[in-house]
Image (cartoon, rainbow, N blue to C red):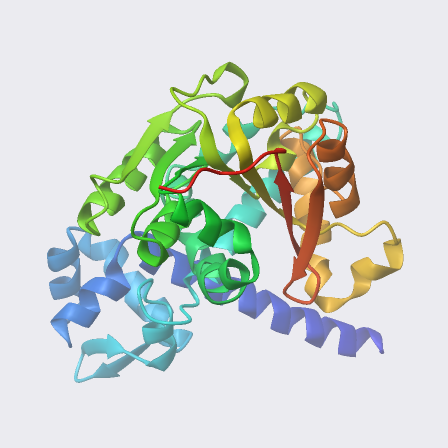
Length: 345
């Protein structure tokens, strides 16, 4: 490409980033959602209904109109097709792209500064932007919930076996509780306990479980896995994109803890991005974002894992394990079992 062609290509990419920035503002301030309920509204009417400042909303409406999220009719606005697509509760919502764009920019800025010192401040960086953390769980749910319910869950017999025993499923690093709510929908006899290090996530998980009628079956607690004691051994312990967050501290102790807190015959099910050893694979389109995220994981004190590393860690604590690959082999679900047999209810 010529220099001018390169500039044109990067200008187009920059426009896409600006578009997602505008969408993010509309999502986290419920402007898209409020305008849907109003049908049509002036900027002042939208600001009043959303409880926002009129000056900011007026300028947001102009920007959202410029990027095609809103249409304008006689100085009143309504959602355009791309605005509809940003609504968090529509099938196939584009909301995760907008949330990820802001989170990525934040993490890139942190990595740029920390690269000079080598500091790795840990998980707290996720909470440094007050508007991002409340949308982290919904982003993951929108990205992975359908894959889990339609593809992963039917492919892993362990879930049905745990359901038949009316077992306890524990989700470590549960976020907003989407994984346990999906299990509860599919398997009406499963009980669930979700644990997360962020109190905001735990409260969001409790509210969503209650609103969806799972309050009597699902519990959520704030806690640190390194200090955790289960009240009863579990039939299933799940970690969804959470293992790499605790791997570097002491994996031998962690995997022994997983084994010891399972009933005989119980399962550990670990879902992780499937990191490849071959660097050439990173240029594949589905893996480019993974390469960027692995840099930002370093800021948090983490790194992505190869599926075979996880299998080997389970086998060292006498838990035979199998890796299942999904989504063009970018997602790995490792299923390990403590020797023995689950007791059916």
